[in-house]
Amino acid sequence: MSRKNIENMDHKSFESIRQINEDGLDFWYARDLQTILDYTTWDKFKRVIDKAIIACNNAGQAAKNHFSQVAKMVQIGSGAQRE
Image (cartoon, rainbow, N blue to C red):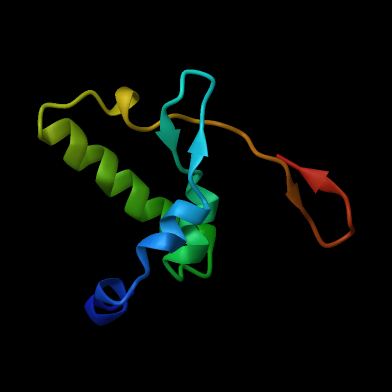
């Protein structure tokens, strides 16, 4: 994604995919962010997430407090769903 595209992104886009957990804390699913940030394939976006986790750790933060592994059911071509 180009810098210009990032600068023109609408804050409401992020709010539209925001989730709230049972403790009232905000979070976002990576698959939803992938779409908003115009990553066409998961493997390319996963590389960005992996770099963000490294940066988080390098900043002295515990990545487990900011990134978690969750499974979400997605529709596949046959009409079935999978994690």
